[in-house]
Length: 491
Image (tube, rainbow, N blue to C red):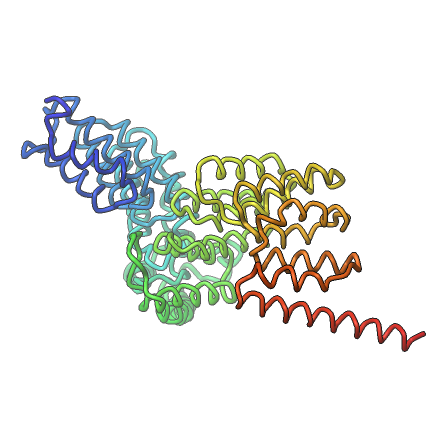
């Protein structure tokens, strides 16, 4: 079947060229590719039909990389079509995009177990990588069930898996999980009088404490262990309840383009603050990452996360976080934060590349971006005043943004040069309140007669702005007289 024959898909594809941020249209495109005009997709579908499906998923996930279940469906399609390597590549790409997604890791690990060969140790390493990423997630019970099941099922192949099984179970019962009770029941089952054995004791009890256990009397050992781990149960239960206070208020755990209520955003903010005060690094990171999946469209969470990493001097991680944020959220505030980070790290070339790329690709350039450009140029060549004034000149002519005159006053340039520079734009910005204030400021610094400015701007500014200008003028004049009076009194 020729690609163009799928008319509905072709029509939606054309619409997306001019409307690429329309998630509903992307979902429609996927549905039409899967439906394939009623024929569906299977192993006997033509290469062209399969490629339409593949490219539909790829393009959608390029625009919306946080759609967990579309990554999973994409990988499952490849596997259904007997494309093992392609399915593996999709999962690996998905993990790169969403390294802290519970659903992705569980599906990926299930896929690796289903297709297991002689790579047992590779899969074990994958489980450990996943544990570092999602092991502190409040809802990671499915992952731990899968991990424990894997260790138990392959213990006959690798003797070390038995030890790993008990060590993992011992670790899990101290992590506050929603289904913590399941793991405690499993653990207590192993140390019950009817099931306890020397093998269990050796694998659960640290070597230095084994001497205090009389393994000849298993009934006594069981009783001791129950007492110890009942205290652990109470502690974990308390932690679960304290986290559930926040968890029960979170209704969206996935990415979507629709708005999130202010109440739920507030819950995430409070949850993160609670974690920062009460929990270790791994728990904080997990909470931030969970939050970012649901609140990806809100730049403040990306910036807060980056600030947290910067405070820990984890600059590379902060950089990668901001880059991930810019992949899914085009808000310029994330770019400004990334530029500031590169400047702080003295990566001036990287900072300049970020700025110039943004300016080339966008019609509207926020003032904050121009501020970073000016600041960067001044850092690189602090003594080249003419160069800086030329950049100001070009930006003002291009943007017609009068706020740039206020920014100009923050630079340590000679007042006479600033005055001369501003005279170039006197006519163009004569009706600008910001320009008028900036000019007044320079006149006062140069101790020039400012009375003629009132006359000049009375006919130039709007009545409202002129009244504000007069207030500003007389306020500054009074301040100057007061300073002069104080100086004379000292003499």
